Structure formats: structure tokens, C-alpha cells
Length: 218
Image (cartoon, rainbow, N blue to C red; front, side):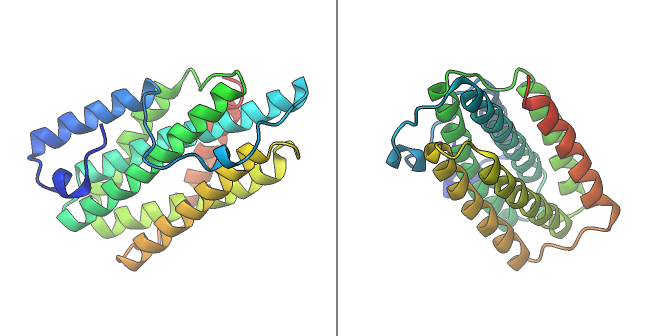
């Protein structure tokens, strides 16, 4: 259930908790609905041999899991944001991440494959991390968003290079996602996001590497 930003802003604390819980259920159950059509729909379904299909599916499963994590991070940050404007910004970004989630799920289905079986675990852990970032204060929370999105930009660029050459459909999805992530980072920086201290980005990259290695296979 993705509420319009203006409506979400009027919710009480308990209502926000219930809305976040509903979003969590939708996310891990694969019930996310995109507000925008998938960029992949503009490309023909490619004919991939089995190894290429498995590689594309593994990469798109990682990206789907990444969007589960992004959704959870934003939900955790928004739930404990101190400023209503920061909360509204996080909720608007989360709605675009819902589009990404639905696009990746659609492409996985087209590839006759499935999301990561560990998505509930990824969601819970990422929500907790987002909540901790929010407790540090809105500027640190926005700085965490900036660093997350910059790392996702780099990750998506790597996957764009690793996709099978014939899979223009997946490539169109990842290119659109990369553009959105860059904008999210720029917006958070403009709102006063602080640069994270040196150990934190490295720890984030290490955690992401574990997630990607596991989600590619499971």
C-alpha cells in the first residue's frame, strides 16, 4: 500500500507503523505495484540461451533484492525521521523504489525465475539499519541515503556491463533505475545530507557484497 506523500504526511505515529507494516508485507510477498510502466516493456523479449538466461536471472534477482533492501531502508528511516519534510522526501523516494521492485519482479517472471528466498531476512535487517540511521538525526540519515544511492549507482553500472548483450529488456530497466538512484542521491545531498565517516561506507560495501553473492544464487 503506497500512500500519496500528502496523505502519508497526515498519518499519526501508529498509522505510520501500520502503513509501514503493510508495505513490508507487500514487499516481501512480491505484491508491489508500479506507478510507472516498466522501461523494459519498450524492448522486445530477447531469445537467450540457457547460460545467458541464468546469468540475466541471477543479476535481476540481485537487483530485486537490492530494491527490497532499499524499500526497507527508506521505511526504517521514514518511520523515525524527526522532520516532516525529511519524512515526506523519504516516502516519495520509497515510492519510486517500489516501481523498481515491481519492474525487477516482472523481469524475473519473464526469465522464468524467482526472487531471493531470503527477502524477508534482507528486509528486516535493512529496516533496522534504516531506523538506526534515522536515530542519528535527519542530516545523518540523508547522508546515509546519499552513500547508499551512490553505491547502488556503481553496482547498477557493473550489472549493465555484465548482462547478456542480447538482453536489452533488462538493460532498459537497470538504466532507468540508475537514473532514479542518482536523482535520489542528489536530492538528499541538496537537503543537507552529511558525508558519512570513513568506516561506514566501507562497511556498507562489505554488507552489500555479501547480499549480492547470496542473492545471486538463493
